[in-house]
Image (cartoon, rainbow, N blue to C red; front, side):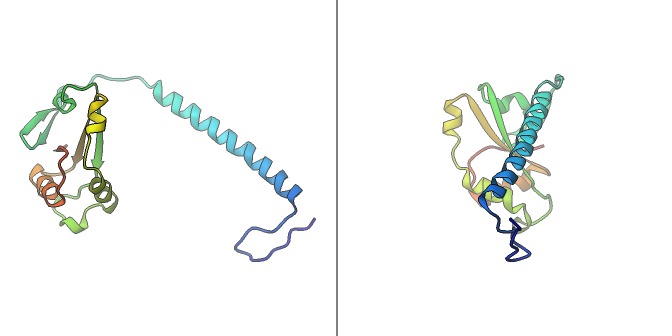
Length: 143
């Protein structure tokens, strides 16, 4: 059957057999794409690791050793807020601000041995003003 073009912007209308053939061909490509993505992820997990020396971040209590961010828990989840030093609050990253606005409580994570913190670029006092203005209660650190 010849494909009937209804609108040059939308795909052509075809019979079911043609659609099934094209869908099968696309499915093979999708499976290959998934397998390659899985292989890349596995290779990433096998990358060698390196020991990190003492690192200190600036937090509400001043310089804070990185290990203290774990707060005695086994894991640490960090959200990297794309903070723009020197810019007013309305010029900060909208996506990051939306995410941080919706994240108010890490108790679920904490109960499962996971600590949570926000990192941002620039002087801590700027991050602290932003944090206070937004009403955030999670720890923030300048990195």
